[in-house]
Length: 251
Image (cartoon, rainbow, N blue to C red):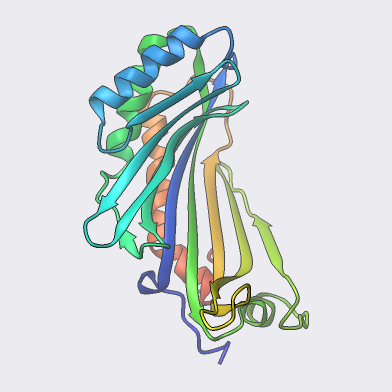
C-alpha cells in the first residue's frame, strides 16, 4: 500500500507559502518602532486582502489577517512577521481546519511591492537573501505515514507509534534546497467518550526551502524574482517526482 501511494496536489490538506527576506543591518524592534509602524500601515493600505491587523510592541511586530468563508467559518492568521534575520511574508493557501483555499495573488506579484515599500521606509538596509518556503500536509488517509516515509525513503523499520523526520539539503551552485519530511496525524475528539480522542487520518508534512547562496551583494528585483521562479518551478513538478521516486535524480 505504501508503494502505491502517490503524492499529488489533490491530496494537499494544508498549504502555506512563506517568503523569508534576510536584511542587514538587522531590524531593531525597540529602536525603530515608528518606522515599523509606518511600514505596516502602508502594507495594510496597499494590500488589505493580505494584511489587516497590526500588532506592535517594543519586543514584537507582526500583521494578521482574518480569512472569512461564509458558511464554513473564519481563521485569523499571521501574514507578516519580523525575525532576527529580517522579514517573513506569509501566504496561507489552504487552511486545513476549514478545508478551504484562499484567493491570494501569486507570491511574485506581492513580494516585490512589499520590498519596495520596505526600502522606501528603510533606505539604509540591504537585502542579501530571499527564500521561498512551501509547507504542505499531504493526506495519506489510513495509510500510516511513518511507514510510508520509512519504506520509501529509508531502510529503517519504524513502528506505527514511532516518529520519523527526514531532512535533505541538496544545494547547487546558485541555490540552497532543503527538503524536510515528517510523519503527522490529525486527531479528533470522540463525542461519545469525553476526554478521549482518536486518529482521523495520517499525513506527511513536507517543507521545501529554496534560497540564494550568493550573499555578497544587495539583491535587486531581478535576482529576487529569479529565486521565486526557481522555487516555484521546483514545487510545481520536480517535488512530486522526488516524493514519488520517479524521474531519476530530482533534488
